[in-house]
Figure 1 (cartoon, rainbow, N blue to C red):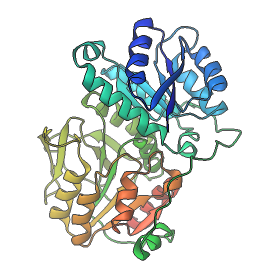
Figure 2 (spheres, helix red, strand yellow):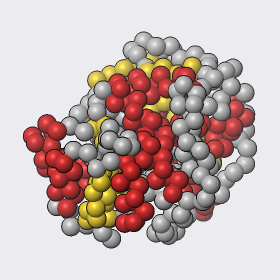
Figure 3 (cartoon, rainbow, N blue to C red):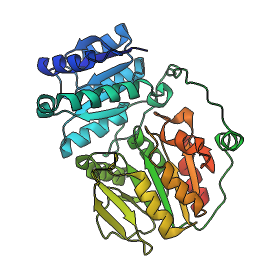
Figure 4 (cartoon, rainbow, N blue to C red):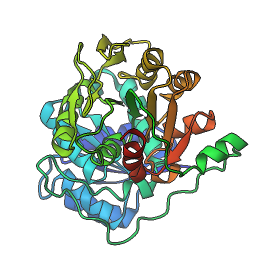
Length: 372
């Protein structure tokens, strides 16, 4: 199926280059361009693209305001372009709150120096988010770090998600997929949460439900560039009753604290509850990698880990979850209907590793029930 894309950017050069790159893929067609946020809304309504690429800083209307309006009027997967700076991270997180699905660094040098790499990455992103669940992207209504509303709940329902290929589930998988019972309470020593595309919003929804006296230390693994994780941890810390920080080597796990793996590196946990930060291994696709952190938790805590796999592309977390299950720990997966991308949780369910499958908005409550 050919993916229809609307390209939005106030830079004529960037619009042309993005359009050229996307048009070089026979399964992508650029159906239109826009130079500001207002035009983007009009074009989205008129052209009904499958994906929109969106700049942030534009005249008349910025990208975040445009995304928010598009999500209210015609929910469409949006790929944001952002700068790899702390301010760029803050703006990108605001855009994800407004409803954008994913983001890419906006780097003119890379476009000139590594055109094939840029083409592969951009086209893969577009194809991936074109398959995202529109029910999952059309309902973002969270709060900014300052506590103000970043968007109102949709007054009209989002369009139904595109039909997904049917999968024949073995009995164990069918049982997990239908699980909605309250979890059994246990003296867990660690809650470990892994996620990717759609994860920033998903993590906010889960962690903001936890009370300040949540008794179990938490580690978070979100696929994200190095420049973004500090800003993301700061945002979560302001929104949540628990404390949240970006991990540093030597940090100690403690109740009421969630530690976020730093982008570009790997995070491991030893048996004393000490965080170890290692350089990102170029042989690994993900930096940070959910499998790495889950695997170290399995080695250090045996059956005392509660792992949760949220929305995201690919299968990162599956092998780490397998090690956790072998040690007797529990693994939960987010359900398909509430995922932006049902990739990582699906890998858990299809491998028969899920002890429970919950809708996103139930996970925080169930964590409290399981740990308090």
